[in-house]
Image (cartoon, rainbow, N blue to C red; front, top):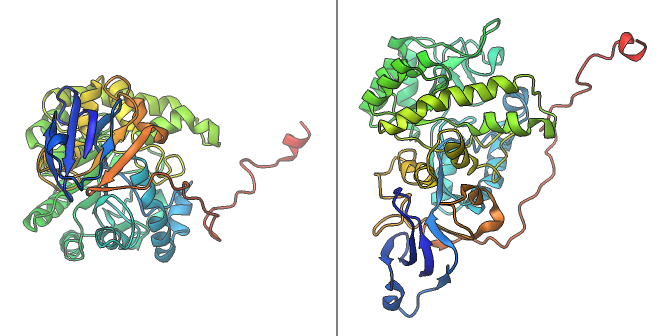
Length: 436
């Protein structure tokens, strides 16, 4: 029984002061003023007076098997599967302690994602509810890692597919081995090109979506230009990541298709705003900020047209370590999209049901019969959503109806041998530099 708090139910509706919430197992069984009076005597009581009670956050874009690499070299060359699973099992409890009670990891190293998901559900590993993909599908043109991606076969989180037969077979295999989603890297970084180009054809993408949908499995696509977003929407992709530089044609297609969008501004914003603090290259800061602003302007119209927007942090890199930035996307939805705090909270909770492949209002809301994933927050996120990013403001996290122990020390560890790339210098030590 959670008593006396102000309930923000995740639907976008107004906050309700003095509301009690009764949980029985993994189910909310009563919500309302005075509910506590009818609670069974054995109920454990949490006093939420002066606090906000709300659904747990659902992170729709989290790379839990990556292990916080600082470069693609580390990600692809220093993450063997065994080490990656150890790191994932160590890191995933941090999400719960940051208020994340559900997340989507759409592409994983090797085949770790479904195994981790099942291990969490079986109680072998502490963590939030998880939906998982397997390897991201790439063409030989690659993804964001350039020539680190081979012309065929797999590496890290990537699987290169060369023709329609391979696309169909690999999609079917991924469903067979437990993928909740099939992920496609529609855009990639190519030499001597600015930005990311679309590296899939319509026929190739249709082979993925038609095969996956025939097996009752949705498709998620990485799209970092307007053409790829248009292609994704017209080919039946269910969830579009980034939708960078969305234009009017792509917007119209997304609205018509019913696809959801997870823009994932957090990584770009962290690099632009804070990268200098950790020695990150910041030569393209203005470009990153420009991408956020240009994309946000059109995504605001998408929101007004009814497109579901999901919050994703892209946690799993050195610029987005686990447990620290899962709520920043909510702030960015307010600051750059112009959403109200209640609207942004709904994107991070109720809309997250899409990422978890659950019916709307069955999770991510404070309502009777919804899943018992709840936060008690010291503060009012309807006035300042920034309180959701401060772990010190989390008084209680309830996952599957069970309180999470927030009093333990934060997990710390030493680096594993070979985990990080050693850099001799950041520039050439020329004679002219020493003696101008």
